[in-house]
Image (cartoon, rainbow, N blue to C red):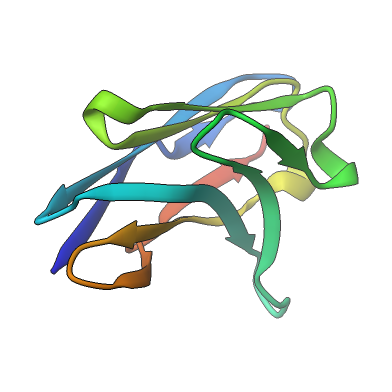
Length: 118
């Protein structure tokens, strides 16, 4: 099985920065796409950013120019650098990975709370 453990969330003032990390462990042979999603209260979960194994990135329009996704394949880890945070960015952030063990499966982290407030 594959376990994803997230870290880096917290409370930050508007205009501040946070860096989220998500590390995968288990009997992993490879990881394809890694991504970050978020879910605000009373809203559906939405894609924030994704990155392929080769490093191609995709961002939601509402974070372009403010957030940067990156990955370390040797560590099976994905990062999300969040700058210029706004109150509207307040949500639980989840990482997602398509990882191959004996088969290719989609795995989710437990979520980490990000709160942007003065």
